[in-house]
Image (cartoon, rainbow, N blue to C red; front, top):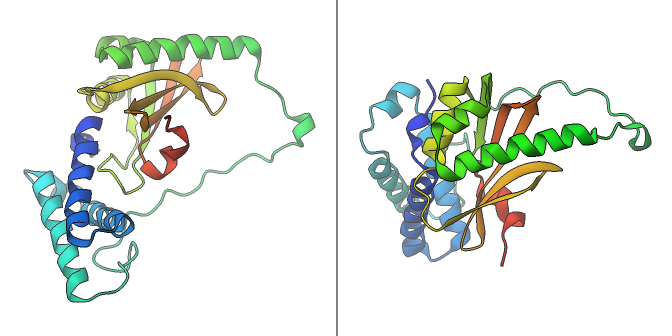
Length: 235
């Protein structure tokens, strides 16, 4: 079961800020507060699917856990335990996929210009649908077996498993990116190809890359991890 119920991007960002404010109020240190929030989300993902489904109000649960971690630190000063060192273990990282041997730089093939043009055209259709929150338009640009993978880095309550199928991907992307007051959606180069960057007050909150085959998107890659978004911030 995929944790699609994590909420919209706006809700997740607000939830994280809420937890940070609790920790900052207790300790006054941004680095300590960030570690507390990361540990809070680690404990969330240490639960199994059934346990998470049984939590009626995740934000309330996370608030209690964050407060408990603060009290633990106050009672026994010391470094916050790293992932897997306390409580249930963190979810195992997926096994790395075999990578083909890289050819010397001068022998590597460059992307065909026509392919880049097609990619740009399809990616812009996807971006327009995302900006409008149009699930039907998103579904139309996705391949039947499309997949979406998102990365919160343990710092947002983002889904940890891939989501498969055009219908499910379209619903998830619409849900994630809906309700974004004050969010700028920009079409930019992501890893050398057309992608999408979402910003609030100049700060990147999500970067979206896509894989394209012919006229359809086969994969959507969403980065939500704040640590990986710093270079995308704008004044």
